[in-house]
Figure 1 (tube, rainbow, N blue to C red):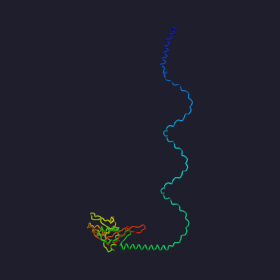
Figure 2: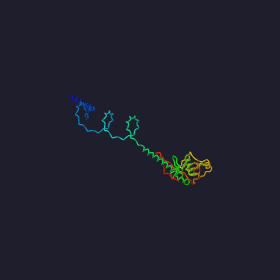
Figure 3: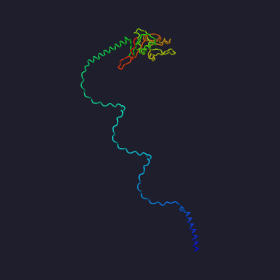
Figure 4: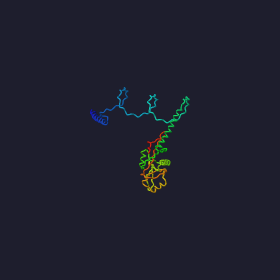
Length: 290
């Protein structure tokens, strides 16, 4: 009995010591958490639920590949007419068409009376031309070329006054730019019983050597033609005078220097203007006779 109690006293502490050592060594002992069990078998598929609410639109996706070309549609309605385009280039000449049918014969023309009318008009035209020529050459005393009229004004004036007078008549002082025109004007002076007249030529300036440059009444330079006599030109170079810068035309057709303050007759010129039909007419009013 005593041995049993002693054995019991010895075993109890040993068992407690063993239990305590086991409990302190195992981490799973003395915890309040529940540990999951092993994974179970897959359950059955449940029933389909209700449709949820539509969410917000997401960002646009990338453009897809172009689709195939569809079949052509039906013809639409005719639209309004557009604006007229530019005129195109002239096309090539086409082939000659077939000859037409022969026309009906025309009626006989009584041209005798028309010939009489036309003939009478020609006669009247010739008479009118002769009358105009008579007025120009005899009454007004005009001379003319293909391009100009010339009028001898028998009013003694100084050079500047003569120039102004021609401008008031609608022209300028006569400018003999060719030998033919110069001779026509010289004959005009001689037939009038005169010896000299002013013309539209004047010295512009004088250089150191005493030589002068001349211009016409229209300010164009004197070029290509001049009717100075050798004696007159030499005399003017040897003894130039400041006031002898104007020019006169002698009845012999030569030019001479003259003082601009001298008073003498003069010749004016007036341009002709051509009509479309070729007939001549005066650009301004007819020059008044002296």
